[in-house]
Image (cartoon, rainbow, N blue to C red; front, side):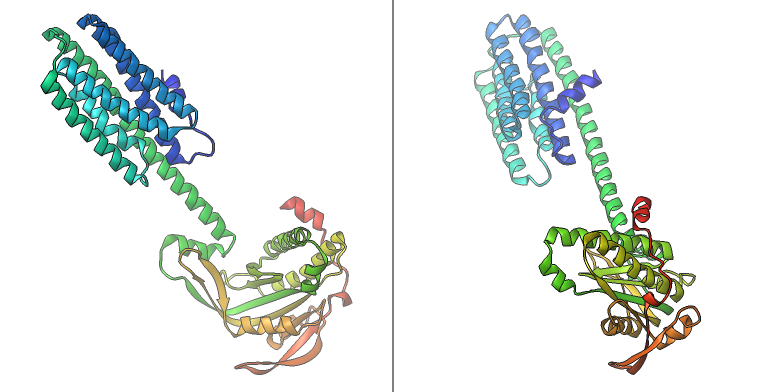
Length: 421
């Protein structure tokens, strides 16, 4: 039985329907089906008890109308099905009042009339719901008035009325069960929808901010802001990207960037580096912003080297001769999450500004670092003195350049990284 009711409830639903639309159609279909069964009952037992063929024929005609509502819904005419049903259920109420008289069991049908519109209209369809309830109110008033003026046209014994009461009560119980299940399904659907949206948001945030920061964001609505005394910041930019845009198709350029930045993300995770953001063809990353025990400047510099080797590998696959400028600085910085609807993790400070200026001043294919960073890296890598740069608020800043091509070729196996991802 449950299987067949479920099949009836799904009539007219499609994969494109949202959760609320599916629930509305499910409830409407059950209402159509209950009204159909009630009309069949009236046609059979009412016709026999009253010995009136007209009573049976009218009830049978209403049953056909209710089944037609299911048919319209199956044809994706849900709006028309609801309108036809509301007209039919009001006509049904008027019909019962005239035949058996008001307050002789027809009031059960009034429950159908006023409850069903609330089940068949979405929260956003306030105007349609109001019009439906107004129509039902008019139908109820007309039915009671006609019943008092012209009814009852048929005479029933007390026993016959009792049978009608019990039958109507049975269908009312079915209606209540359908309402309860509908409300439960709506609540469950809303909960599942909110959970899906929450998981989507959490998944997006996991990709855009460090895990400890995400934990703070998800735990409370307070502003997340931290100060970091030992941060290393990297800016990387593809040299000649603007000229490349004019030489290749947008689709090929996007494919190239997606492949390259996906590889950079994998390398960042491998080296314990936190990706901050991408701006066009620029890539920003840092260490020391997630926790006090985060990776250090050595990891960030190794990541910078891997970026250069990776760019060479990927660009060769596409037939490009692309090179990269990279700037790295270390020192104090602050981090935090900004935005209300679109939360973004970012870092600020002189260390960040200096890294950006270092990237702009670096020679193509080389890594330019600040003096404090140089002193922390000079025992592992060779650096050449570079022209000093002027930075607002800091004055003249000494810089040092590293040429990755002077060392061993540590080209990363890009295909391996793609498989691991």
